[in-house]
Length: 139
Length: 275
Image 1 (cartoon, helix red, strand yellow):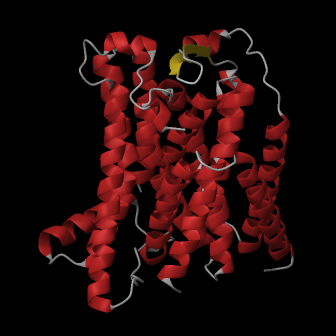
Image 2 (cartoon, one colour):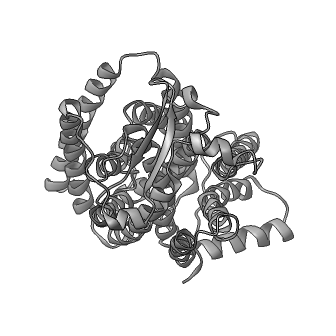
Image 3 (cartoon, one colour):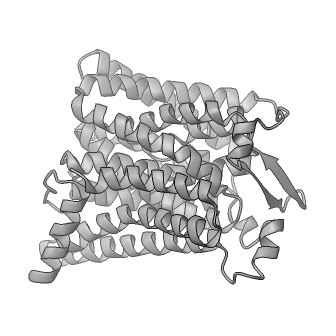
């Protein structure tokens, strides 16, 4: 169902795309694609490494109940200080996955506020970001 | 617990979910509980996998220019708040209640699939001032009909609160609640089917993220479980969207409705009977 319509710009978009080389929908799509590919790659590499060391695919560690900010901090701290471990790659995979829709929203805010100058949607996107930022980063 | 078994079950769930448009969560959570996983951990793992499958398909849909990002942005405010509420309820509530709620949701989804099959196409009324002010309209090029389709959304003031309910269900049960969302787009806002499914998919990712943030903070996200579920449903969903074009939609729907009936009743019985 999807592929049939790939690359078919909607009528009004075709005119705009002459001015902007990459339309906002495509950029948002590439952000999502990049995020999911990175997350899955990290997961697969992490699991393969874990398998090579332990001989099984069951990763047995827990993420202590912290909010996303704390989770991200601990990953970055371990990446900087310690050696790379399979568990670290797997945690990074989850973190990248969770960051992906967030980054897409950041891009939407940039687009609505600066390129499109659509204040209604800049505000609406800000509300979305505010709610997510609160749930991910506040205590 | 075995990675292989959970991975395979997740592939099947992702396949069925993608082929019916219901998402994999509605199958994977009951399946995990049958394998002996605590329902709260199953819900948390499922919601992370929902981010993955939604993001994967949204990356293609958005570039197709059928997804309406504005309609999505407006409605996702409501569905995200709902997801935060729903996930908080799950964290605080008992196991039996979750089984009962899940069973009921499965049976309601089944009913909505039955209704959808015999539903007729209706005329979209004139756009109301609120929806007009929110710029809830758009157009896309329909290749099958070989013409641009121009559409507008209506009754956004009802769709918003309805989306709060859909978001709460999603956060509560760790599912995308795509069927419920498509219903809102379709019946309340009067949007074309293609716009409904693709825009609903875009909202599902952000909604699942809001829910996942609550489960992460509650310590319910277990990487050992998340990995096979996330990878399995993603592989399944990827394959499902491709197989979809080749086999009869009716056969898949009948199969899926059968699956929903069996696991819906099972979950209810386990919830009421004290697990």
